[in-house]
Length: 392
Image (cartoon, rainbow, N blue to C red; front, side, top):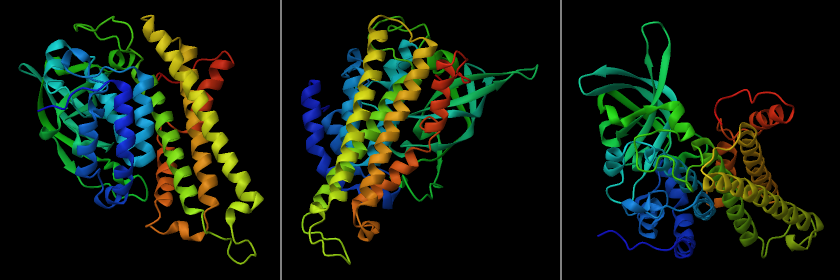
């Protein structure tokens, strides 16, 4: 039986109650190379995998800002879970851009996890009644626990040109290569997914451009207001919120370790009494607060445009990328400050703060999260130039 639906404040309270369990299983996620079943079950019971599913299919259909708050809370307990949820929610939103029959299939249970492979490293070719999909998608975060995978692929034309598509495939029809051998973010289970001539009905193949812009047709929710944020902007809003939640978790872990700690090889018996520690704690806290304020502005902008049934302008999309990445960079800086103030014992694997630090560094390297790239995009637009990318 599906769990009873909760209102969003109730969902947030339930998620906060789950945070200790997520933190408890964080090391297991790293060791197993995926989110443990106990964590997935707790998140399922809480209802988080219903957040982006439209209400007509038994989901919650929450606005972006409410989803972002939940993602932040989950990252506070387990960075890998927060990262994967960011991907699964994005995939769920993308599934809502396909025709009604596809939505009915994907959302049949009201709760779903959809992973995403953004890089078009596969191919599709025509066959009777649909397409055949082949390819390999690296960094396919959370695919072990996903029900569906939304994979980018190209269709080569006879003149040498290529069309790009997103293809929805049940995960059971893919092969997973256990190649996620990494020094950080191991708990995300971002292995390679492989398709070998997988048959895909034509209705589960959609234009890459139309999906990213949210302009696909032939569906009940085409043109409806309130929830169409654009895929890249949606990702950026969740990414910043995830990073800030991770930083709050690191702050809590740092403060929990302080009582009774002195400063080795000095006369300081209580690290809390040292002015440098006081400055470091304040600096980290203010970076988190500033990042949250900036993210709040981004989320409010996207909601205003969604409520009006409008796409953000090119300038606004560049601003979203720049500000969201900057907010996440502030979160990263906060974690680095706290980690550097933690003494040599922080490198022990039994100390969760070291994993939060490593995961934050890894997440910041993602192509959509890199601060310099996003500053360039925003800066170009501020200077009256084109953004230099279509990924907006």
